[in-house]
Structure formats: C-alpha cells, structure tokens
Image (cartoon, rainbow, N blue to C red; front, side):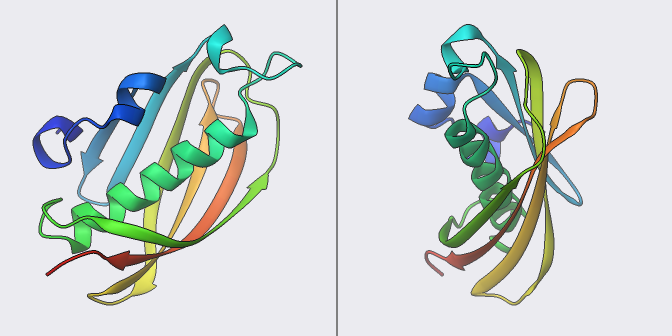
Length: 131
C-alpha cells in the first residue's frame, strides 16, 4: 500500500522524492539518493538520513496505532546513531514499534543503503496528535 492513500503525500516527500510503503509490521521510506541529496563527501547528508528515519517511525506509529494512518503522530524525541556513509543510489528506512500505548508510542528504525548496509539507526518517542 502506498502512502498516498493512508498518509497523503507531503511537501517534504515531493521535495526529497521519497515514497512510503506500508506493511502489517510498519512503514518503509524509500528514496533515490541523487547529487542533490549529498554532502561534501558525496554521501547522503546526515540531516536527510534523520528525516527519512523520523518519517519511517512517524508513519509506522500512525499506521499501526493511528487508525490506519488517519491520526498523525508527532515526534517528541529522536536520537540518531550514524553507522556508515550512504552513497548515491537507493536508501530505505524501516520503522518498528517497540512499546508504548494508545497516545505515546516508542519506535525504532534502521536506514540501509541499496546494498543492505546499515547506515543509521534511530529511536524515537511519538505522541498521538488527535483522537
């Protein structure tokens, strides 16, 4: 299922060119890394990796605890650990709920380069925005 049905396509998604795929266990954000996304070393900028992780975790919380994406979740905290450079090509970030309840949810996500190499890991706390 694409994010356009459950989550809507945001301005950030249009700007960066990522998509969100929803599955029973969570959400995966996929993006083609182009020169426009890179830092001075030619790798995906760390702030954009954090954005993809945050998006995957928020979409996972909304999809699984927000009535199939109809209720958004807001990021309360986000901690990112960078593990390896993400070169040009493809990158994906997949979220997974680790705890919490109806209003507050704990989520983690791992970002991977196209060859499967983990490039970053994040944990976050998300709060139900409404309902």
